[in-house]
Every structure is written in structure tokens, then in C-alpha cells.
Length: 135
Image (cartoon, rainbow, N blue to C red; front, side, top):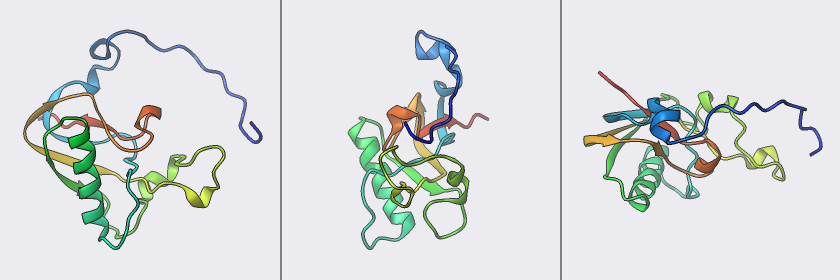
């Protein structure tokens, strides 16, 4: 791939998620983004907060999870959140201006929910990882 730096990959772990990444598996009512949440839908004329809440609700429903109250952790009214700019949010064959809007979110459920909780577009590549807020 042109422009991709040479890197060395090291094997880190294999096994059940509870053993390999226990920090993702606890049960909690409040969860927050470890990596940016990338919405699946395209934003139409919705407010940023309404758009994100509807997108997360669809993702939770699709995965058989209960509904949650969604809050953006960034106070600015723009997409993507400044925090997400440090993460590459586009595929190798896409232009940078087509990058997905990354968001830092907090989810609050009515009852504790057990993890892992991975939501949104490209969650299979490590985006949309949520960690429980304990205590």
C-alpha cells in the first residue's frame, strides 16, 4: 500500500474476551468511548445530538441491547469531535475528506449492562469500543 509506513506487529493475546481484555467485560450502567464511535447512518437535517442518539439507538437495538441515554462528551457543536481527529477514520482507498465523523460518547443504561460493548461503523476494526465506568 502506497504511503503506509512499515510496522512490526506483535502477537498480544488469544482466548476468551473475559481473559484477554477483562477491562471491556464488566457490568455497568455508564459506559464511555475508548475509541471513537463512527455513526452508521448519514446525517440529514438532524441536530448533532439527535443524529447521534438515533444512530446509537439503532445500533443497540440491532445488537439486542437495551436502550441508553446518549451524551456527547465534547461540548462543541461540530462533527467530528476534536478528540477523534487523532484517529484515522477512513479506509485506505478513500479520500481524507470522506472520513467518518468520530465521536466521544457516554452511554447510560437503566440497569447494568455487561460488556463487551462495540458499536458503530468499523467496530470490527477497533472503533466504537466502550469501557465501563465503575464506581
